[in-house]
Amino acid sequence: MMKILRFSDLKARGIVGNRVTLSRWIAHQNFPRGIKLSERSVGWIESEIEAWLKQRAAMRGAGSVEAA
Image (cartoon, rainbow, N blue to C red; front, side):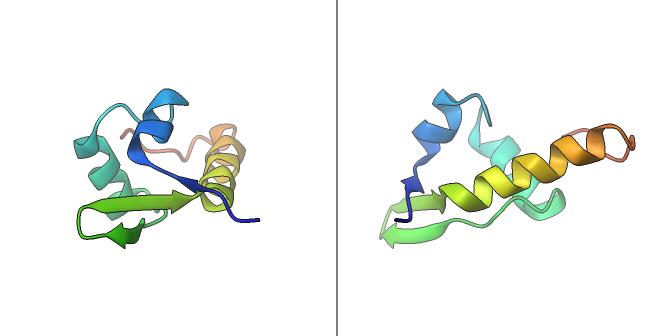
């Protein structure tokens, strides 16, 4: 079953601290785009976030992760 994370979930898990950084990551760091849940609500698919984190961790040793 697909789990949807809200911004507060991303923040609580220590993935992102603010919406400006999140927007920057979406634009420049290949962070998954959210899905619109309602007029003023966005969510992210948990498995996509986990895959993004694994990709970043794999690049850590290669020194190719850019500063956010």
